[in-house]
Image 1 (spheres, helix red, strand yellow):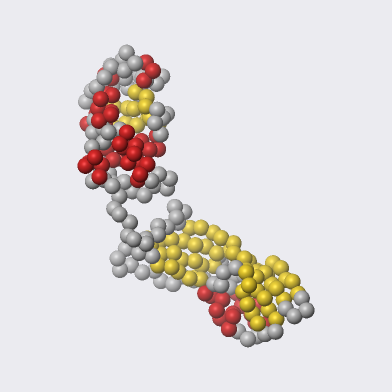
Image 2 (cartoon, helix red, strand yellow):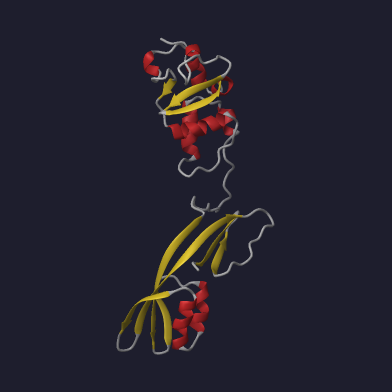
Length: 231
């Protein structure tokens, strides 16, 4: 058995009033005893003499839990509100905080604000790249998108009556012709182009001017999605 006072990350002595190190799932976390003891579980654990199987090779208290979840629990112990995480949900963090016996009222005060009904959050990657493909059927004076998305910047192409100009306009919009199937009455042409999609958070009263090569934009409650051609 080893009392807590003789354990630290350097193998020496952990001061009862200084920072205390814990090994959670192989990751070392350091905080003051005042922070640790906001957790009922840790307050009890750190007040006891520990068996050898509860310490690691460096003499640190070892707790076999998910270190990513524990990092969020430690943020709560330090008084920070939970913010959106790319992998963890508030429900998962809340359940882990319950395991470590955080006070319920204290925990509820650090919950994330409720989402606005219908609010869609942008993805973790704020800029993405896509290669889009579309097939256009021409013939008998028609120009019809038969596969793929009808982008807003194609409207003028659709309106153009001159078939020769349509292909030129498609190239100017960044499309590249990759296939061309000719039948007796029509021609099926396949185009591809690379586009970028990015997301920007907007504060009250903030606006974003139209970008060069912009295709379209979709406004949500707190952020804006913009698609534009890859120049």
